[in-house]
Image (cartoon, rainbow, N blue to C red; front, top):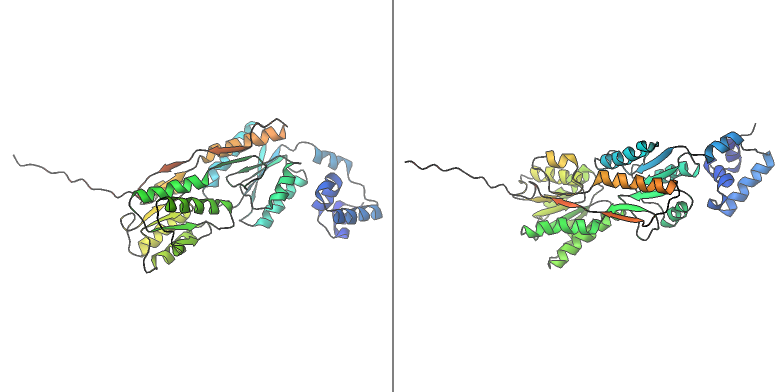
Length: 341
């Protein structure tokens, strides 16, 4: 008996493409559709009726796609998603893209094959037009990351204003030579936080020195290496705002290796308020995101889409908070004095 995989091999396409031709031909190009249908007719392929019915029913599975499962930030977001999912009878399938857009596209195929009922994307690096088209056929929610102008339900914070707040904290402490270690600049969150940094500097008439902006890749190691570059400058910065806490931790390690103390010689601000930011010595001043609540809201919205309930709004922006800790606060020792009577 001819199988879908056989049709795919003869048509030189993936089984997922054959499935789309049969179930959602509108998502396949005219040329590919004709090629697959030609093979189907030639071999007289008949889809397995039971399997096809199974794919069209609810799976009670939802897919969550994350850019990096090793990142401490996503654990609480995922917990918020899972608690709401399990409470409503759904299981969570996790897909880790490792910051690879091709892997992200592969996970989306699970949705196209109807192996899941909906998807929460914690990474949004695909083509905007493709995502918008997919969202007209399948329940999709974006959380944490987002795409400007995309008509898809989105849950996040205002990253521009958050970054502005973090930078203004350093300015309020008297710093004028402030650096910024960005995330990978092709990611919208990196560009937004850079924009917030620039806005804060310009609003206080401070020059954004090009050499003071270094691009990292979200990791501890990149925070360390970019900070080493900054400290090697002829006139190094006295403060740095890092894209996230992992990179801020790396920056602090670099400062210590240069023989500097934080915050006396270098003030450091991170982002995300991961657990390690409060444990590290010194503890890290950071922007706190309501991670668990973002996950909860994303899953609640996805359930509404799955159940075809009306959404009265599609953009949900949560409030952030600046948490001031030891990496920007200089400890003042109070010595007790005793009078001899």
